[in-house]
Length: 224
Image 1 (tube, rainbow, N blue to C red):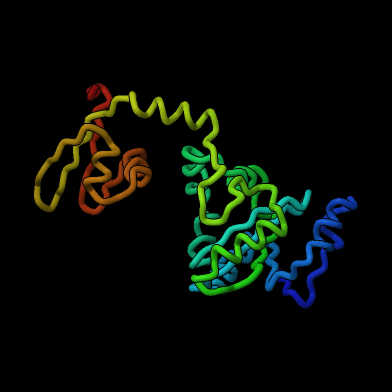
Image 2: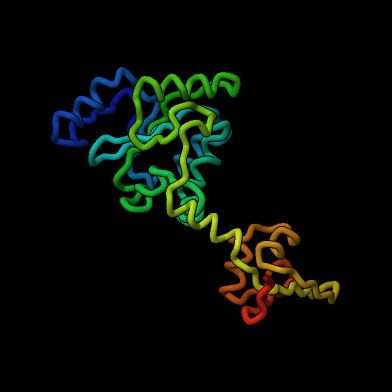
């Protein structure tokens, strides 16, 4: 179900006065509010293809929200809809919205399109809504900036461990050219092959060929 600005009513979202106040007195009327985010995924993405603007995720349970902007909202939403992407990003950043989407699922959220705008004014308009609505899930308080962002302690530990962690010998066999290349790690092999580290790991785990190449990792041979 898709709720447009003309018919939107929040009376069924929550029972507490705090929740009602957050929704009824925000002085913001979204252009569109999407419900049933899983069911309407395709429509939501198609409707926002090539559009520039500001969006907001709103938690149905407590009214907490996250505000973001994108020069291609559809492309940005595809990432939100990809659980693998969210999980991978949480390895390197302490995103509240990614965590809560994974924990509570899309069914517990509304997605609002606050406004469409041109690319030149995108950051300015995002900042306007950040200042006005003060979204709880936003760690960054300045649009388009990393000011105020801090990695979690767990993430910092992972970064440190990555620096000293040795890689495994990785061999890439090209069936077309009948050549074999050796790399010091899976990450180095992925970079040389022109694919992401995550994608190469997935093919290794499923033991499938990728683009005419075969990957072999020797975990007994560690490069220090």
